[in-house]
Structures are given as C-alpha cells and as structure tokens.
Image 1 (cartoon, rainbow, N blue to C red):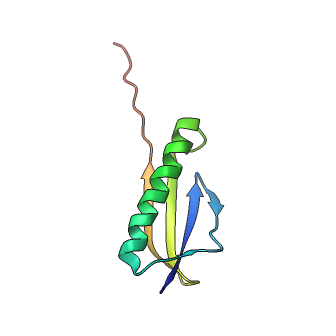
Image 2: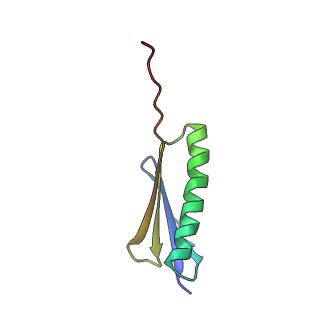
Length: 80
C-alpha cells in the first residue's frame, strides 16, 4: 500500500510530514488532503494566523503528486 505525505504550507511556512499515512491510492489520499487542508485552514483563518493554506501530497519521497490550495479572501465594501 502506498504511503502518502501531506506537507502543509501556511502563509509560506512549511510543515513537512515526515511520517506519512498509508492509503489505497491517490484518490483516497486526495480526499484526506482536502479534509486535512480544510480543517487546518478553518483554524488558521479564524485565528487570523494565515489566509492561504496549501497541502502538497507526495507519494513516499517523490515530488508532489497533487496540491490542495485553500485561500481566504474577505471583501468589505466601503460606504458611499
């Protein structure tokens, strides 16, 4: 079973996943990356510590095979 690593970038800060997790295939790893990314982004966005979270998924020590990018954009209209 392939081992996938989820490296997280929060506003340019890298948190490298050294351990990884076993998943049947890249489609299952993609679902986990979306869940992981949205959870991290939610906490970071609410805390105000980041407005962009990226999860790079790599199989073993290979280059990333997919990327989940979540960006917060808040628009506040001006009066007038």
